[in-house]
Image (tube, rainbow, N blue to C red; front, side):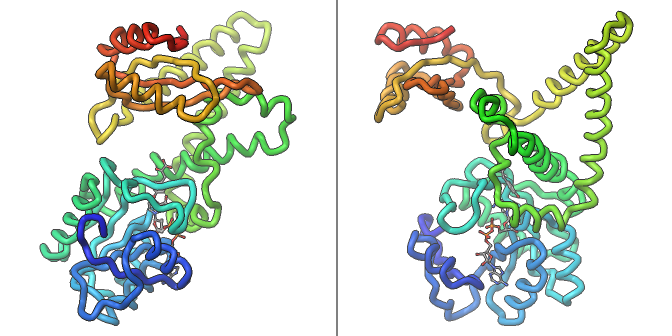
Length: 342
Ligand SMILES: NC(=O)C1=CN([C@@H]2O[C@H](COP(=O)(O)OP(=O)(O)OC[C@H]3O[C@@H](n4cnc5c(N)ncnc54)[C@H](O)[C@@H]3O)[C@@H](O)[C@H]2O)C=CC1
Ligand SMILES: O=C(O)C(=O)Cc1ccc(O)cc1
């Protein structure tokens, strides 16, 4: 926001957090001399109601929003505390990091990401417009939803996946070192968010517990079915093995179908990318050199992942590119001596 010329006033219960954010260029810790256009309440979900009530009592802003990952509970609390709900609109930017705090902040975090807004019948146009302007300034895409529908949606696409990632990673806690060392890209992808802050997630999950439990209960039914199918596959009996094969194939295909529905970059329809794998030396500047090579060939890199070979001084870089650009990139890289893998 400061980069876009907006005056930002920072306040935090922990003065160190506010000063760190200010020193990173996020705004000033001075108090505003008059009510601001929009106050953004960025505290754990369970505190949104009380902090909003306090900000409104102090007359800090003309409009108010929040960024909590859960929407129905904070709204109910705001109503119960007698907040002015006409000048408050719930908000949730759908992007985050494994770490919290000002040092983990990034100015481009919300670019191209959905930002849910939950106006109600009494929300004023001024407040809706202030929130829409905030979303636009952050380069995000506004999505208007009802608070309850939002909470069910994020249980499915964010909260249950978070717990599942933690559960998969928890299997590794006491696993044999030789097993953990074999970890490849698959388990890294599935467990990336297991590195998240437990306190922040406890706040989020407590505020949406029942809805998340519903999703996990359905998942548990599927898990039991998969276990049954694998037991059948492990047996000697022919019909059981056939049933097991069908069961696992069905899970895999349903997974393919669900995965294919996840939107591509900037909310565009899902896109199929081709992956070109290049081995690079584990030394400074190699990745930059590879990216410049792709740019010289006129190829846009849509996504990138790096797999480090255990104990070897090479990395396997997986470049995701448009299928039509594969030949162009591969021939340019081979011509210039890169080690392109099949
Ligand atoms: N971190 C993430 O990935 C995402 C978080 N959110 C939501 O954003 C909100 C904030 O989360 P983070 O920034 O990650 O947490 P954070 O822990 O980095 O920031 C929360 C800040 O609120 C301050 N605070 C606590 N009580 C306060 C009070 N009474 N008055 C003033 N300040 C107070 C804390 O000192 C802390 O600096 C949460 O509601 C979370 O659900 C939303 C999207 C993504
Ligand atoms: O890590 C990611 O990819 C996320 O998208 C994290 C995240 C965490 C909490 C939210 O309320 C929204 C997004």
